[in-house]
Image 1 (cartoon, rainbow, N blue to C red):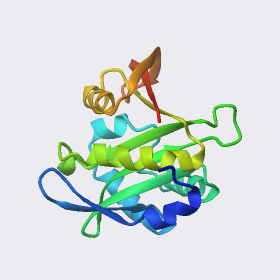
Image 2: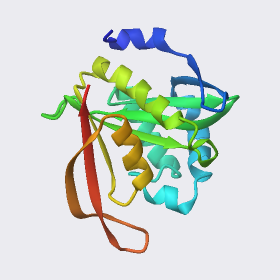
Image 3: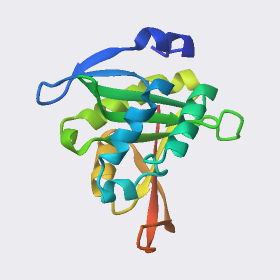
Image 4: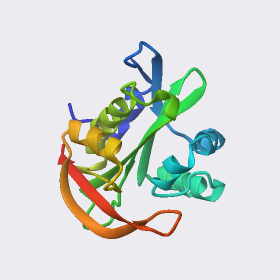
Length: 185
């Protein structure tokens, strides 16, 4: 079943179980999640932060993210255990551009919840809602040496599309290769 944007209100909140039996709730992020998202990001270690496309420990960056959500250019699903955000999945689109049929998926899971299947569940949420945004292809970008992320996306049916040499710079100024993966939905 293909969802329309109006259907998203009926989809959420939704519940699921992680591999270890932990109950998780998925719901759309709102502006009220601002401080919780910043807190989530600030709990990540330096290596995790290195691989984020944007510095979401910065209140200004999170404010811009929330503004993108308000404009309908980004849809973010948060995963909560109790009242704690333990992960998120975002669909980033550019509705007025010639790539409007391509959405970028971004997923981040708190280190305490990695290996529980949460990343796959978040990806499933984004895959389910993407058609409501006119997205027919999902793309994911990561440094080539981010092996765990590559493996997760490969399991989800994403395939290598391109490697861009030297397109990512780490905190020490070293150039890294960027991997672009994609899958049709």
